[in-house]
Length: 363
Ligand code: GN1
Ligand code: MG
Image (cartoon, rainbow, N blue to C red; front, side, top):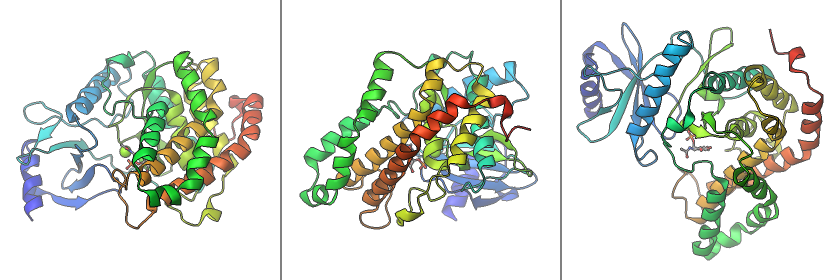
């Protein structure tokens, strides 16, 4: 009840009266808290997690800039932009000092949590590709880094090395095999460092959280748009493609404890490739095409590293519900990475031979 009253006060700043609406918990995000506001018109209300996002104004700044750019250049593009308050702000500070924002609810849209048909991987990759493509001429350096060094693999590796120095002995012993696997596959880090030091990839506007639940579909399951734009910032395409590989290729997700269920559906790889290129191919550089397959190794390796580091640190970042959960998540990602590496040669051969004009998904 107290919370409903609190959210009601937030709504007032948008000229809405809380008593005209039903406030329902919404979505499955772990970082921000989300409610659906139901009335004559529906909205999405979100609380921004300041433990993760230290400067919520940076998110608001980025979305304003990008929103304006879309409005001028491609006004038909569906960009789910935070709504302005009565005084024109796109972010509200509650009496509790916490930050909130209101978004329009996209009617008749559907989200999914799992990919059971490569067509969804194609549609999602096309949406993320289109987002970056439409911002190709937008100067990405104008954006703020809402999570500085978020996908900097060198930093993640250093954090892992630090955690090894300070971890409790028990945890070090339990994670021995995984620590060895990460060290044995350090060539993935070497490749990342080469990409960065030799400026091999162009900086673009990148989403940085391409999980399937961040895509809205219409009733006939065609992609509509991308959502959850807090991590939109300058970056490299390997982040978005890599996280799609990490989360779309196997129907068993990172929480799966029965590792025999982690099976790569190679058709989903091809669907991601064809979907992304259907939007991005005209602006992608030869180097980007060359690193397409690498991107999966980069993101799966980074996530294994992050879970393992958090396990060694005594589970301080990722929420856990049972002991050793972060170690099991790291093991899960290592199984996925190994399967990806086993399939890598076929992926590369597919890309060499492919002709996106004859994609089976395009219609
Ligand atoms: C976090 O909570 P969620 O799913 O939005 C994390 C991602 C990880 C993911 C792994 C800000 O995202 O980078 O890939 O967990 N986001 C942040 O489940 O750290
Ligand atoms: Mg997110």
